[in-house]
Length: 196
Image (cartoon, rainbow, N blue to C red; front, side, top):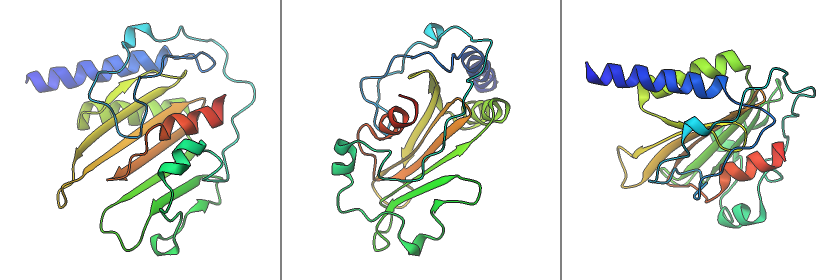
């Protein structure tokens, strides 16, 4: 029963965080902004930016190049890892403008990083992130004027860490799922490219 109460409280907190986000404001960035969350807690949600009554006038253009959205430092950490190998199926820019970046070697059993950048309105984003908090135990906080949710877990077959990091702002969702490949500063690099 206590777990249900805690999950409900977490979902309400995320609802408050998302409805209080200022898409043009800037939040604080955690000290470790890698795709793999740090063990220290994120910023206090009570310090989220004040709400803005007007949406962004010009929608953010979705990127079309998986390398161009990353800093030189992050690209150096991914050096030697194949990008969008045909063995993993469709990647790159989809018909709807969605960008999928698959960093993985087809010869490796588990090491991979898959990022999808797509458009998602506030309502569906709120529903999805609330479900991740309530049903799957994700942790969310509000850096860089958006909402970031993340979780890590032990791979079921190999002694490596798997995880997922999502960042939503201005109707753009960055969704990264990874296994044994979490370059430091990865998500923050994409956020900086898209919104700064």
